[in-house]
Length: 430
Image 1 (tube, rainbow, N blue to C red):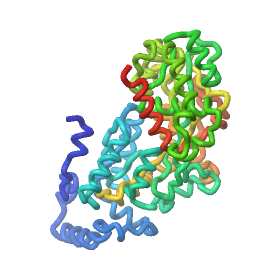
Image 2 (image 1 turned 45 degrees about the vertical axis):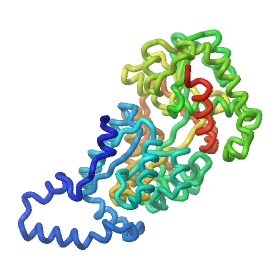
Image 3 (image 1 turned 90 degrees about the vertical axis):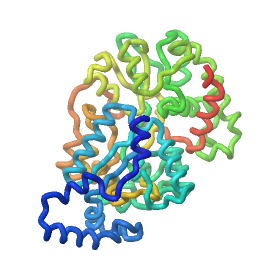
């Protein structure tokens, strides 16, 4: 059984050994006083109604000693290391144990919450926090599987200045309505080895011409890996004769007609891909490894600073360069959400607020750590906090400062599910 499965099926005792450990060494008087305080606090811990979002101090008190099971993608060592840093910091400052339950697919967590609700588990859920966006958020929201609204009650949420940055309240065209808290920004970014490729293709149609001239030097991750699925959406947006239907539910459009140019394109592209399009890398990190090994000359990522960070880590050659397609690329905000039946909502709230702190956001932005873009608005920070976001290191593999000004919005989440299903039907047996 994998670590994910072990964590998912673990029976959580009423008081963990870690919790019991805190009682050891205390005097009887101190122990009785602590028990009295615990009894006093029980209504707040046990009842969702008592979690007053306007009393943050009470939430922080209730969070002490809780174990927060955070279901989050675990496919990248740099991301995992950042989450481990967050766990260490939360334990030191808030007495919260943060457990990263590593997922291959966020849909696994959604399915578990659905199963718990069907079984009548309304307040002892195994998941306290989920890294989420897109179709998974839409599915949980539509099925009343989320706790909240809570996001705008987080003290650090004001630092995102949502009035001037409406993208922090919108997830794949779906209004978040406070049921998830913004955490980071992503945008499709291409990178190439300038020692092998002088002028990279600037559009999806140009990419096909380039692939024909350089067979086997490009590929994309196996769908439904989110990086691979994002490539499908980017291609569809550039190839569709009318993009308006993509921002409405797919069921309201003629899916076959809208997507026909995409399938024609992929039919033409696949014979010129790495391994003739009969095999695909499992993920974005796997595609990056192929670039590092020299098997590919051109690749892409959803983390704009990833190529520069990989050069610094000696995973990619120093001749690596990054760029965005001429017409712009897909970008979105990613979020964290709390299931309706989370066992430790106070701990999850404190965790979500910490992830929005300038300290946590600046560390996440550092290319040497992760390189994930911040959701904070610099105008909302004081001078000292703003200074922590400045990176004046010279790295030729990094994007120019204004490269991300052209951002294409994500289609409605229903398109991603239909695209993935159709892709698997057409190419999954290869």
